[in-house]
Length: 392
Image (cartoon, rainbow, N blue to C red; front, side):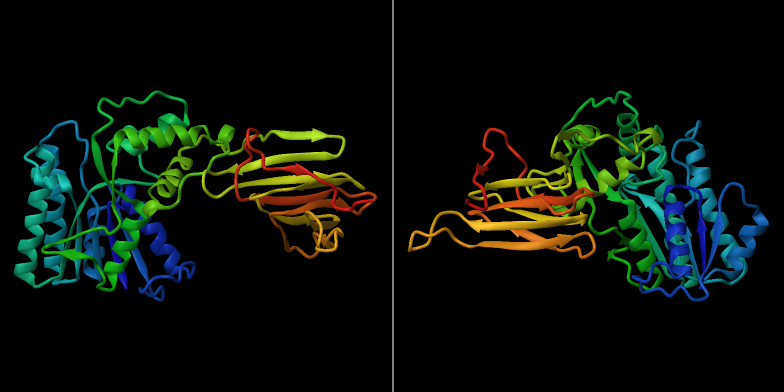
């Protein structure tokens, strides 16, 4: 299949071409379209008219993503959006090529401004072309788009907010209650690739991106400021509720300057080793790493509700647990032990109501343990009670 992408160096074009190449090269197998004999023709401003003519002759599917968003002169809207679409369809007609054609319109096509009028004209041009030639056409009125590789300080408020906050630059929110209709670039790309095999989503004459989001400007700014503080708070975004925070966080990370790719953590050190929090969440607990020096025993406490998972990733140790209290005969409950090492990684559960410890059995190596707790540590309510596992 020969696929023509116009506007291939733009935001949508670059992301679409990238994933199509992954399919072509056998790196992405979760699509209905086959990567075998897949050819991608990328047309942009630096391409020649001769290349476009050749691509239109060979194309089996056309994604027309070329367009003008922020011209110096408003009259350029019609030339860049309607004019290029007209040129593209004329070349397809010239070669008698009635392959499917997709056009990226905008929800602003419903507005009476120069940009909306140019988009509306491009839509009508495509509908007329379909009636004339019998070609299948797909008109997408995109909402505001966001995701990696989107140009900041251009026509995307999300890109601008992400860039500025990631670089400690100010943002302006005149009315935080304004709601924006957003679609994430990976959802857009998945929809466009589905359209290659006739699986596009339609409503009347128009196609649409499923799973879009409606979010206020104030909420977007609030979330991005939270993301900026994450190296200090260790918090993670909420990945539920349709995944908007997950998508926004991935977008935000793509705007980080390279000197912020890494950040230090606070290591709580003493003569026994160290304990370092890595991740804190409001509803999924926290992840930490514990380092015990040779011969050291840590823990010797129990919890009412808090539960933990210990995973030794380096060294050789022993984890012990004992149920708190005594049996019906007044005897202490038996100690249960699990020998652990980085050579055989497994999870040991810390059970509520069981006092527990972890012992480094090595004389020379540190014991490194990744720990998950079902709640982030609260010094005002630690739910932690000292009691040795082995009673002498």
